[in-house]
Every structure is written in structure tokens, then in C-alpha cells.
Image (tube, rainbow, N blue to C red; front, side):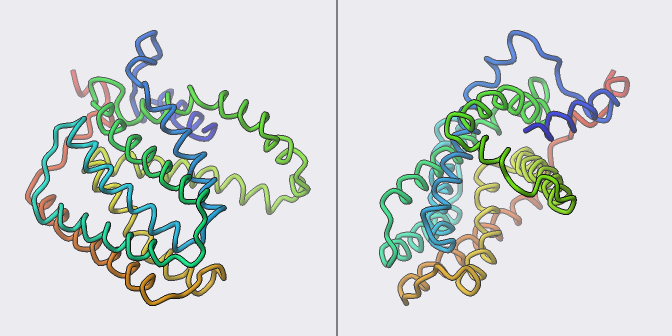
Length: 274
């Protein structure tokens, strides 16, 4: 969050990007994104520690139908039958894989489903609030981080995580510090690319792109993670999930080629706009 604030604020000062200055209307325009943002991260970290990596990957697919449903309710979007069938294929694979999970963990399943809900809601509301005439994509990123950095620090202090971090033994290790700062930068790039994907496409497309990324994660986790328990049904379910995700990507890419991308108004200098 601190990295996001610094990068965007310096870029704004140097007129590389533009987003509105703070005023009393900003919190109302942004709500409930900050709460969804933090809920998404906390539930995601909690569920990852409770489940095997491939199983976590499969259960995260429930984000996709939730996103489709929320986009229909909140944004009024409609999707073709082929796209709905692709989503159903992803769901079918997830049910098959989860139903044969040999390492069932109720607490892990609860956290990952909460994570699905937070992720879907966060994606849809981010898309809704990225109007260039309002906060824009840079404003959403900047003020999200500004509003939640202090509450997140308070939560980490109350849970003891902040103390564990300060007592970590490698803070004097130059190599570790370089890698840590790089991870902060990559975290910003991940958030920015996710917002950018939603800006030019849809929250549903962003959710499916994330699922396709998990193709490599799931299969590598089977070989490297050491916590995957193989079963035929589970393996079949994983493959159905991935096939549905690839089908959705193919359909969406075809439709995107036929339509024009929105103009990136926030990257246009103010003098050019006038």
C-alpha cells in the first residue's frame, strides 16, 4: 500500500498521470471498495495457509460465477450463452475436484469462499468506480491504499503480525531487503495490471484471466508443492476447470477484437484535453 501511494503520488506531482485531489466526497465515491480490498487480502492469506495449492486454485474458480452474477445485478451486463456455458464448465470442474478432495479442511473452505465473495465484489465495484470523470483507475488505486493502510497496520499490530515482522532476523541482510522492496514493487504492478484489465475489459474477464494464470500454478503445485494428494476425479476436475477457462478466454478475445478499447483519458495531459 505504501509503495502504491508513493509511486502514484510522485507520478501525479510530475504530471505523468492525473487523478482528482482529495475532497470530502472522495470517501463516499470510493465506498465500499476499501473494506472489500482488505477483506479480500485477509481471507486470501488465511485460506492459502489451510489448503493445498492446487485445491486452493480450484476453489478460487467460484469467483467467476459470482462475478458474472454481480455484474448482472450491479452493472446490468448481459453475457452470451457460450460464455455462460464456459463459466458452468469451470464450475463443474471445481465441483468434481472439490468433491474428491482427500485433504478436506472446513476452515480452509470457509475462508476461500469468503475470499471468492470479496474478490468478485471488489472486481465489480472497481469497474463501477473507474469512470474517468470520477476517480479513474489511478484514483481508485491511490485512495484505496490511503484509506486502508492505517487500519491494516492496526489489524497487524492487534494480531501480533507487526511485532513478528519487526523481530525478523534478516532486516540487516541487504539481499533480503532488495528482494523485499522488489516484492512491494511487484505487488503494486499486480494491483495496477488487475485494475487496468478491468478498465479495458470487464471484471468477469479479469477473474477468468486470473484463473487461466493458475493453469501453471496448479500443475506445478502437483509436482513441487508436496501437499497435493492425487486422485483421478480430482485431476479430471482440474482439467475441466482449465478447459472452461481457456474456452472463455477464446470467446472473450474474439469479441474484444470486434470492439474498440475505451480511450485512456487519465493519461492525456489536462492541456490537451482542453
